[in-house]
Length: 245
Image (cartoon, rainbow, N blue to C red; front, side, top):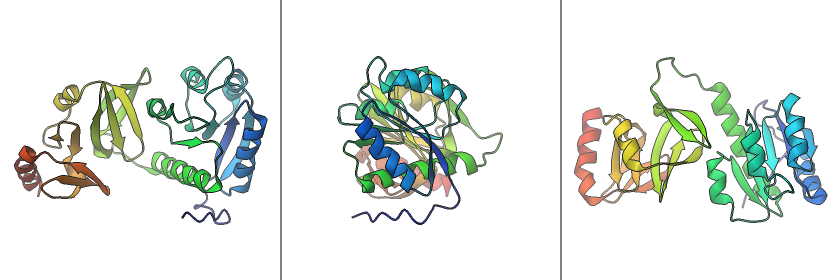
């Protein structure tokens, strides 16, 4: 069970937040939790996407707690219109949008009614993401690829990419900062990624060899996650890891 302690801030980080929800009761609930949290400050609250779109033009926001089903414009449509997207925590009464939320690089996805424990968990993710993005120093010559996600070209630094997973017609990128889904095939990325650093260890997985912590005959472990290893790929993996030793 998660014990919520709002009295101890995470370092000196203070995220500027906005709440967007057409339900005044639900909005009030999230607003109260923001005001009670030492690492959050409420900058704005809106009851519809049109008002939000106009309000955010001249307002600096780090994190939006965003409802999805709203009149005129949905939460997804609002994000499509935002030129600079801050971190997003979706807050909705339905689970059916969870998969689509990946496409918008959501930090988290909360289902109403939101408990303090679940809210705190989402905030921790947002704080960790903020630290990674603001404190990470990357060499100018760091290798990267561009990936089209949510109609935009997104830069992915290869040394921060943990693995890629096939999800039907989509491919899920799992990096040290976040996860996101793109419409593409595994085969296209298998050709694009450097073979001395990345390897297809299963029909549904391409892994970063530098991120492998341990493995056995059935799984490869990366950052505590156990990913499947095809039987006929084990020797290739041993050889690849041996060459990097």
